[in-house]
Length: 298
Image (cartoon, rainbow, N blue to C red; front, side):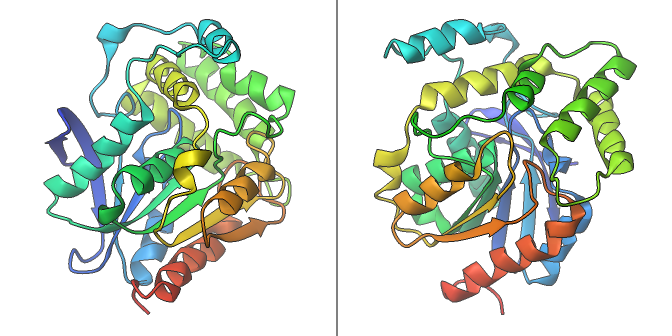
C-alpha cells in the first residue's frame, strides 16, 4: 500500500474507485487499522459514485508510531479527568484530525466527505470543527460527544476492551474474539470466520497495543466536544446501533441533538461493530445524505 508524509508523520493509506469522483475519507476507531473498513464495504461506496480513501491513524497499522511517548497510565488519566485537571497525552484528537486533512492535501484533494466510526467518528467531528472548508459532509458512526453525563457502556464490554492485550498470537486472537462477541450486534449472526481473519491480519500486520493505549488517552483528553459541535455547519448524519454495548445509542442521539440540522439513523439490532447485514443500509445512508446536501453523486 502507498504512504505519504503529512502533518509531520508517515500515513499509510489505500484507495478505491475513480479519483475524479467526490472523495470519501473513512476514519477507523481506537486501535483499528485501515482494513476495519472492509474491501467489500468500500466497493459498495464506489458503486454509489465515490472515490474512497481509508488509512491507518497515527500509532496504528503502518503509520508513524510514537514509541518515545511510552505507555500511558489509564487510571492516572481518568483521575485527572475526574478532578478537572488537564489530561496529559502524547498527542490530541486535534492532531489526528490534522493528520487526516494532511492526507487529503497530500493527495491533492481540497474537500471530501468525512466518515468515521467510534474514535474515528470523534476525529471526524473534530475535522468538521477545525477544518470545515475541507468537509463536504460529515457522517459520525457509533460515536459520541464526550458529554460526561451520558450513560456508560456495559461493564463487561468496557472491561474486555480495556484488559491487557496478550502478546502471544493465539492468545491475542482468542482475547479479541471475546471482545468481538461482547460488542457484537445482537440482531445479526456472529461472523466468527470474518472476525478471526480480521484479528489475525491485525496481529500479523502490526501488533501494537501501546498505540491503542495512547489513542485512548487522546480521547479522554479531548473532553466534552458539545460546545464546538454546536457551531458545526457542514451537513451531518449520525448513525448508531440501538444495541451498542460500548457506546450506548444515547451518544449518537446526543451528537445529532448538538449539531445543528443533523440527521439521525438508529439501526435496530446493531452493536458496536458493522456486521455485513448493515453494510448496504449504511452505504445507502451515507450516499443519500451527500445527495440531499447537494454534494454527492446520484
